[in-house]
Image (cartoon, rainbow, N blue to C red; front, side):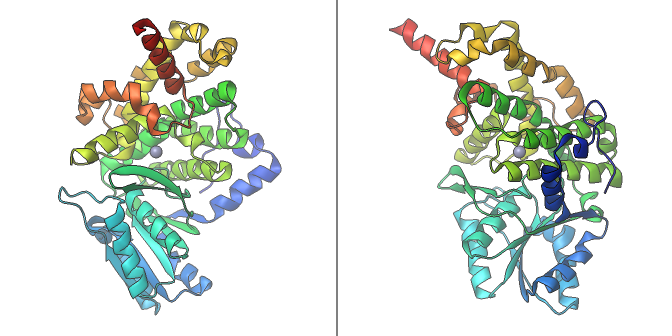
Length: 406
Ligand SMILES: [Zn+2]
């Protein structure tokens, strides 16, 4: 795929990045095949690498969408292809928890697998990634929906005893994103992928905020790659909404670019800020109460709206000038306000989500107002090491409340 490319003023990524970084970016992207019929390229890859026994990780839906065909393709070429169909929990959710990971590990051991292939969405990737890493095997990614940007990341968010933790493990050695499969993905999953991308407005802001006020590490290259993916997706929202091959290809590519930006930086900062912390908070709460999980990107899209609302309010009130705990906030407030201005207003974000057919508010997602309010004051505790504006705001508010109560 070579379409796409404008950041704002019409510059391509090649023009924006220095030559060495652009080459590094291209090398990462070279292992990602996004095309119709990509499933058929997997056998050649498996052969080149000298693998014999292949462990597929699927669920019942992704087996039907692509797993079954891939088993046939690999079988015809003489490879042993085994399938682990990860069992859903009692309410029908596949969760990246101890049970799912051990299920895959047992099959890897029993079948003497020498490579693991994740066939599915983000959760199946997390399970397969962590099981492969633990078994010291490589893994291959076969996304069945353009629903998240984590396919090509190294981080495996897994749930252990009800708590979500992200273990840095391994990225896929190759990604095969078959457009024939992806265009048939359920519409809500495509809208979720777009929601995960829209979250970059606030994640990029929060990352910048942390760098300015708290010395968090920063990479201009990873910012530019992420912003490029974001702006290209937003300018092509109409095309993505059509769900034709071209629209799905460009959303998939944007999600992969966001993943590469994280890989190059080595952490999730470019793609994950306060909007993701809200989403993780909601997810853990649902898990705690045994409620059916919502799509990650759908939550991120709606969380982005809530964070944008708060940040715009703080901008209007010149909140940063009164911040006491961190003097860098007041001294850099003008610069911070400029960066807040780059986040679209809540109604623009809602309109974009609506255009692609995703939920446009937490009400629509069915999340209780009480939970949203609580998460707005506690979500920063999900990643206490990240200094987002939400984190800074909650620390100040807590500080003022404790002073006024004293
Ligand atoms: Zn995400």
